[in-house]
Length: 273
View 1 (spheres, rainbow, N blue to C red):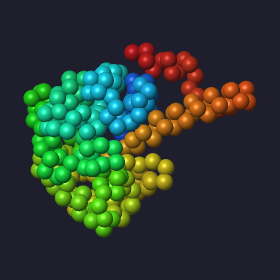
View 2 (view 1 turned 120 degrees about the vertical axis):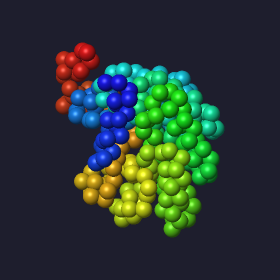
View 3 (view 1 turned 90 degrees about the vertical axis):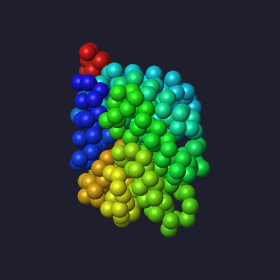
């Protein structure tokens, strides 16, 4: 499938509810594809952990693009790449990042409006300029169909007074849509009443980050959400198994934490392409 066809497929998947398990390396991506996912999102946090770094743009653009390329070359389904804040504050930084990830085989990007983990956020005009730069870069790279999912961290980082956050997000949604965004990602928001209000008022489809304690996929679908991802949650679970198994082996000398693992042949066969 060509990049253009993959991008068009990713766009079409937003017509209903797109469920995106997040991958952090080629192996997790292959297993997610085998599980039946129609597309894959990367997780910057999981990728950072896999190379021994903490999350928060602690990989260089080149390092992240290399990991995205490995994932995209391992699976046949569309890949949308978490490019954090674009690896630099200016529109030109975003342009360089988008051109690189398109070259690596991604057909979508997540672009944050946080200047740094925990904030502050770019003001609306500055982030809109960065979105316009992303769209222009995608067009120059030969993929105007690139799906741009803009992440706003108003709820995640509790920016501003609680009663004003929904309006802030809606202001951002309007500006980002006008700048060329395709979807709005609002991590930190799982209150179904607020999600429903956002869905009804937003000019962009809404992406919710789910996980333990969040509404179910069915509940989010009923609220009108068009995209659900889980961020670092799957990679957290995988690393938690590694830690529990190691502790059990070193302290009790038993192997119960390894029960239920895929057998070697099944797992090895996933990569027999």
